[in-house]
Amino acid sequence: MFALPSIANLIISTLVFFIAAWYINRYLDEQGIPTGMTRSLLVFTLASLVSWGSGEVVDWLNGTPPAPTDLSNLLKRTN
Image 1 (cartoon, rainbow, N blue to C red):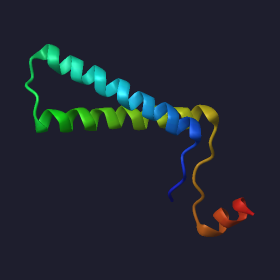
Image 2: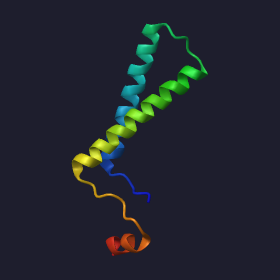
Image 3: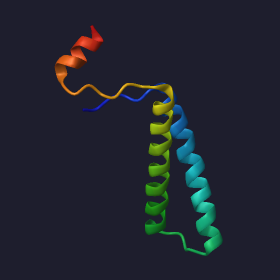
């Protein structure tokens, strides 16, 4: 089931996304790979994966509980 990320997850993963995209772009420039749609998609995909991973690490370090398995547990937690 879907669980909302913590605020720390959102902030850290957003920062990591832009930093990763910058480094990946710089690396691909050094390798001489021409800019284009494929390269942009590659940068976006890799930066998204790194960002998602960093957000998961933040939640793991904060001890955020996993998502409840059914709606009744979710309702019990919110009340």
